[in-house]
Amino acid sequence: MSIDDYKVVLYRNQPDGWVAEIPALAGCYALMSTREQALAELELVFTMIAAEYRDQGKSLPTDTTEIFHA
Image 1: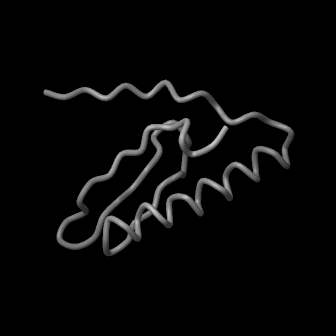
Image 2: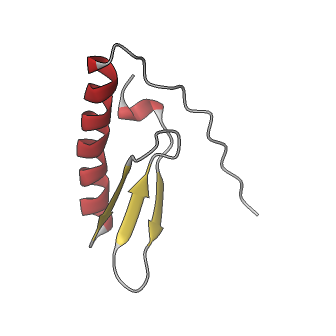
């Protein structure tokens, strides 16, 4: 699996900064000054988490995140 197999949530962190996260993977988030930095950092965090799963002989979980728009 790759990061493209997961939903990414991106939101503003008040008063400054952005958070990018993959809700399906515990601890897979990044807090940075800009949207672009947060998304780039998230890719690095995802790569580290994927390597941890691989080293433990586990598969990454399937993304079952549902997005609700009110």
